[in-house]
Image (cartoon, rainbow, N blue to C red; front, side):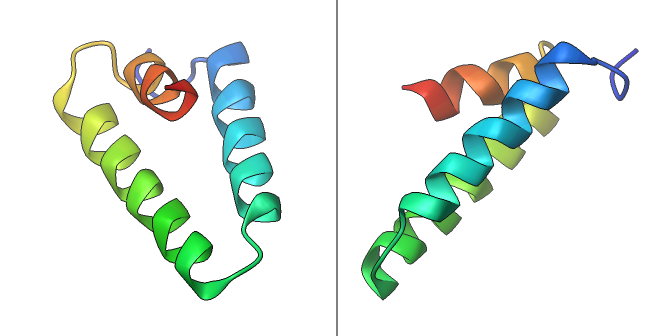
Length: 59
């Protein structure tokens, strides 16, 4: 069930949208892209998958 995590998937998308909307400058946008990149790697490498990525974005 790695790809069908329902509520966790919704929360992940919600966090990403909020971070993207909050970025007002090029520097802030680059920071958000770095966070997305880190979350993607976390999702790929951690057994918790998307849940681990959500934890990373919340921190």
